[in-house]
Length: 104
Image 1 (cartoon, rainbow, N blue to C red):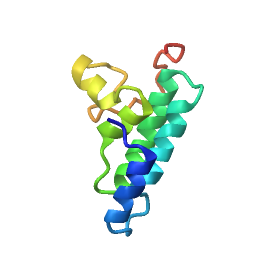
Image 2 (image 1 turned 30 degrees about the horizontal axis):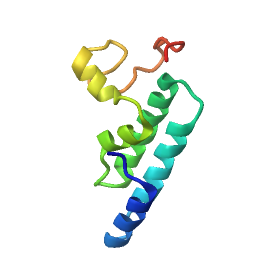
Image 3 (image 1 turned 30 degrees about the vertical axis):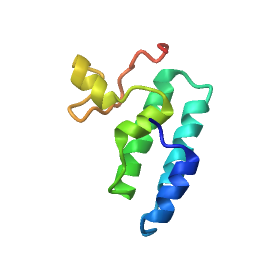
């Protein structure tokens, strides 16, 4: 279940505020990406880019929950399930490869 903005605020108040990015910020980013008019391919790509940075800013970052909030599948899970050559061994899209950009 995606983290709602209200739940994120409540969670932030209950935890120490020494992290740069808090749950409410991550929920906001996920909603912006998820509500954009971009294709699912682009949403997945942006979610992956943000997930890598957000994980560094908060040790409690939950990648699966973030992708769920965006509404797309996680490239790491896709890689593991389908052994897709577009993804590296960490589940990240390989740079410089046409990943079927016209797909949704």
